[in-house]
Image (tube, rainbow, N blue to C red; front, side, top):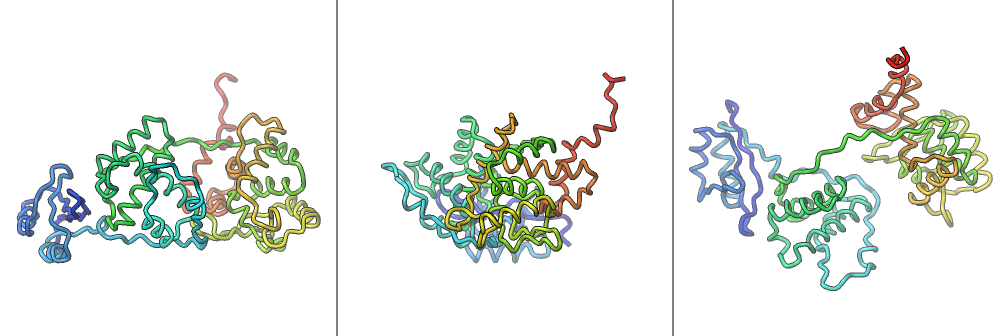
Length: 376
């Protein structure tokens, strides 16, 4: 029916006025229909036709193109689901911090939308900080008057300053969040290029190195922390959220509640770890969380990282060891021991085996079967 014809709707902001952009491939039929739109114009900057953003114009677009071309409105309407994060947004730090003179704060509407969308606290803090850095770079310009070219120059500045790919992507996401989510203009900055993702291989320890790290922990509590991270492949955030009831010794599994992506899963429980956990429980008597901080509060992620790092240094490991390196080591050692990659995917909580396949590049199983030509 459409004969391959399609037209994509985009949000455009030209001279602070909203328009509907119409993007399409060269086609006589579509060109003829576009000319029928009221007060239609062509933008050289965006390389597309555009009309005023009104309900009447939007209805007319659907009316004249129905049955002739497929109208792609995925970029025009905001259909992104609200996050399932149950943790309330805490912006106490935002109100209590010291504010430099002549510093432009993140708009209240930005904070409100983060709360409505249930963004995690760490993500919200990163977005707010990154967006404030952006709007203060263009301090003399009204926020809504900043255009795509301004954003592109700002991103280029970050790259030239040597900012990490992660920092650049957070900056882009924080900017897009304001214009697309807060102002309701989905995909306004669709022409902004992102840095290419680096394909770095994970850092992996040997089994002997992991055992040395565990042996160099200060006490039974620290020993359990390191052992859990390695023997279960758990993330640091998942460890500090563990409750007492999540350890199922009858089935020898650990329940991970609301891991990354808010997905529950089970992972394996080590018999050696279970012995240590029982000793730890007798000594420390945690009440709610498996690993508790002062006065029964949740243990901090920073403390977990420090425990791993200090034990690694005492063990004589020259690498900078983080909790995530223990997770990488868990997955790699399982793969080297012949565990199916789909089973490892489930234990790690990956949505796709494509993510888990990175460990095939560091596992030594394949290399051991190859005879080095120098040894021939």
